[in-house]
Structure formats: structure tokens, C-alpha cells
Image 1 (tube, helix red, strand yellow):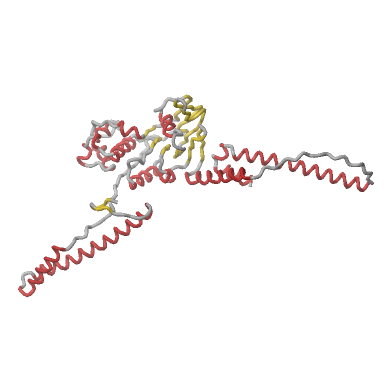
Image 2 (cartoon, rainbow, N blue to C red; image 1 turned 45 degrees about the horizontal axis):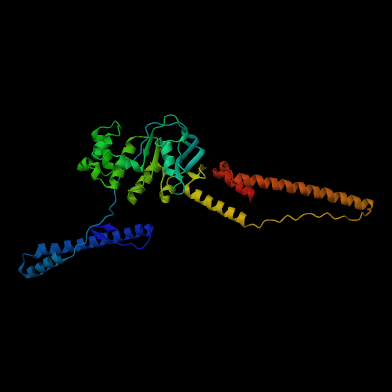
Length: 389
């Protein structure tokens, strides 16, 4: 870590760094306070006795010692204090957006095929999938920034805002920061816009800096500020944590959890997703597979499903042996023996019927476990899993 013009090393992961950093800060703070007490005591001695002949030499010695003293710097954890608050002006209807029969491909690369999905009010969706599966493309389809086959319908009173990587480049490089925020047409005056920019760490003359001289992180903060002033009730976020430092990401997570609108996001930061999403969309086999639950719950479900599939494949296949009919000599039976034989035949027939019912039920349960409507609903899936076991 680069801190106080020095490079500090932490041997461990980020959690270790946070703990160790706080410990080092506390130790340096105490060392600083102890040194300041020492300096004050010696300065009082010098001030009191520098004019006395008997103590002048001692006072002069203390002055020289204080001059040579290596001063410990005061310390505090340096963190940006962005104030991100995504306000909602209008309350939308129950349905935010509906996708019907959506297909999209690039030449020979098929992204989705005749897929459908629905975004409801209150949804905070993480769109996930392997690299190249078309997550960002799907987000652009929802935002209306990508051509596609099929239908996309907005719900009632939906005010959307799209934050994407390309928007950082789409900022007007000749504008200053304040002018760029004015272009968002939020209806706010200069004083209000300066207040918002101050919350994003642009204060004083910093609002007059040209966009072209800003760093990647500063451009990301400008784009976030433009998204915030829109007062949208539906956010589409493509890699929102890129160019943000770790603490700024924590502040973004906090603000999105407080956000009263709906959102859908794409991010490679799994920890970020796990702290926000209440629903998962996975692009799999050119379809959107919906899972109602958090990212952690989705990972657990995927692991369980993979183990079940592996166990089923590992089971040895039963060999069906041909039934060879053998001709047996007819044996005459008395009445008691005939009755006993009839009972056994009836019992055997009942067992065969029960076995057939069990096989049919097993087939239905296996079909239910593979049904998207069941495995996307946590309660239904747990019940189906319990019935199967």
C-alpha cells in the first residue's frame, strides 16, 4: 500500500490487510501521542529554565535533542468519503421490463435464441455466465442499445438509466466536470450540481477540470454522478466497479442496497454480486435461466446439482437379462394348494402394480428436478429434492 509517501507491505489477503492496517494505524497513533507528550514536557522545561544560568545548559541540550528527534507523523485511515444516493422520483408498476422471443447472434456466434424473461419491481438481478456468453450484449438489449429479434416491453412509469463502460468514453472530453453534469438535464441549478459533485469528491476548482484530463476513476465517478441525478427507478449497470478503489466499491454496495428501485447488473466481481443480488439470471444454452435467490444460494444449488448428476452417471447400468420360458410338467394340485397359489398370484400382481407406480413417480420427480420452473423457485426445488430423496 502506498501511504504517507511510503510503500507498506502486507503478507496476506484483503481481510488480513484490513485487520493489520487498523492495528498499525492504532500503534502509530499511540506512538505519535506519546511523542507529542514527550515534546510538550521538554518544551515546558526549556521555556521555564532557559533564562536561568544554572539550567541554561540543560535547556540548550534539550533543544538540540528535540531538533534531532525523528518526528512520528499523525495518522488516520485515508478513505474517500463519496456520498452516493440513488434517489427515485417515480414509483413504477409491478413489471419493469418484459422480454419475449428474444434472439441475438453475431455472424456465427449465437448469444440467445427465442428466450424470454421478466424483470419485476424490487428485483436486483445479477446477469452471469461464462466469458463470451453475451452478458453485456443482453444488458444492451434491455437498454435498447443493441438490435435484436423479438420484443422488449417497458412497464408503467419506468424511468431507466444505463451505466456502461463505453459511457466513460462517451463523456464529452471538451466539457468540464460541471458542464458534463449539466448535460444530464436533471433540472438542477449550478449550486445543487456542485453539491452533488462534492459528494463525488469534486469540490472547489475540481469541478472546472476538463474531462479529458481526468483519471479512469474520476471519469467513473462523473458517470456515476450522471446516473444518480437521473432519479431513475431502474438501473442497468455494466461493470460498475471498474476504475473504483475498494472503499468506493463498498460505498457503492451500501448505496445500491439502500436503493428503492430495481436494477440489473453485470460484474466480474463475485463478492460485489453476492452483496447485492436477490435474483440470478444465467445465460446457458442460449437461454436465460432464472434463479430466485442470492448468488451464494445459486452457487450452492449449482454444486449440489453437479454432484447429483455425477452420482447418477457413476451408477452401474442394470443389465436386462432375457427371460427364458421353461416348460414344466403339469402337476395336479389339491384345493388348499390351489387357494395358496391364487393368493400368491394376487400378491405378486399387487407388487407389480406398486413397482410400476414407483417407477412412474421417479420419472416425474426426475423431470421436475430438471424443469427450469422448479429449479428457479427455491421452495419448489427444495420440495422436489426432498420428494426425490
